[in-house]
Length: 257
Ligand code: PEP
Image (cartoon, rainbow, N blue to C red; front, side):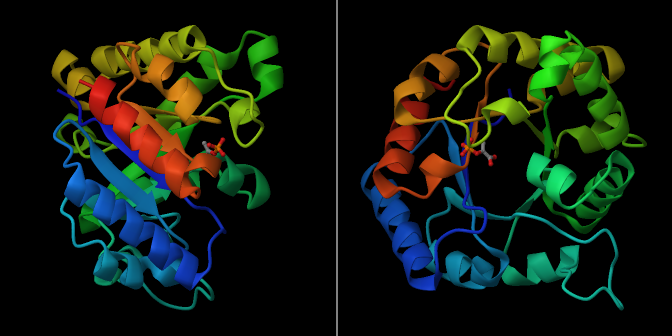
């Protein structure tokens, strides 16, 4: 059965003290309300990774990086390698976020190289995929998601898939306040699961966590988490507000199975 996950992507938000306070509050919450059914992940800005790991003493709170270089080391100014992220204590890395794709020109080939590198070094990649509004309106959204999966997972063996987490994040729903309806999200998640089943195996499809991302809030988390193929969420805006994030964790623990 797939891991159920509530993950927060802080993006370029929260300074050190604010980040520290949010990790500590999440940690305290998890100590007082131990979760059994979900894993909780936060992805702070890179320079806070060590600090976050240090403050996250709870085994249920894992730390993810927001990006990673495809190379091992060398003249790549401003980049961080997989082994550097592991040094910092990160266990996972978000790859192919739509902001990396659209604002920083990351293409499928680069993202695939990063996924492979992360896996080879022992990090769990959270591979983000998602269609634009135009693609959805022109009814090519499933074809686009298939192409992103083909390219992002290219060359991976079935036994490597168990360590990949997929985040379906329709671009039109990220940071816009507009969420995919539970039916729209479920339809795409079921499409992704079918893809995994046909390309790899039914077991792989059953084991890979497929998260939804796109304006998840406490108010809509319940309906989204109630869908059979939604294994949790990757949350941006609501993950940097303590009460919202903790509320979503609570709903996740209650509903996700
Ligand atoms: C994200 O950045 O991954 C995201 C889903 O953001 P938001 O929740 O703010 O839409």
